[in-house]
Length: 179
Image (cartoon, rainbow, N blue to C red; front, side, top):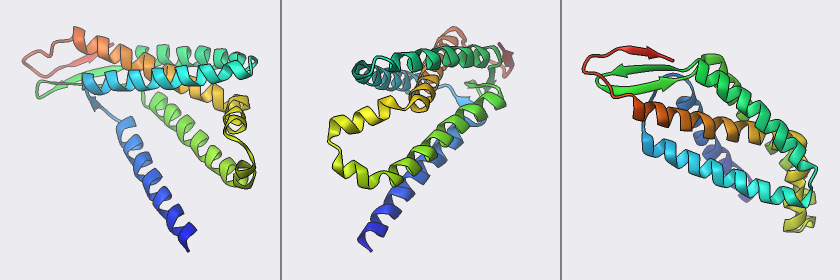
């Protein structure tokens, strides 16, 4: 019974986080520079942390390179298809619906896959020490590739939005600006 209660708390917390992620990913979003800077810093730190763990398995840098290249392609496409709008003197932005959906699908798909894998290997994890456990994540090519696609996307796109927001001073009348 205690384990079921622990799982229900975890599932509720994860469900809430996923709900907020979906809500923020689709549609126009209000330009908030502090939030963008915070995200850039967090994603950069996570990327650096993962890169340092890749030194244990140098072949992982190949997967990092693939993720970086695909992430740059995704960011460039997102920047090209970004839309900006001023409503009530506030600056809003969004990218193409398919890009938002793809990023969300990558995140959710990989997240669900990792949960399933972790549940399957939960017995093995108790036998692993922490170094073996961290190596397990760095050896999985799809995890590293998708992680760096998402990291490059979020760092690059948030940097672009931050720069665009600083350049654009909302006029006194609502208008739409297409990039």
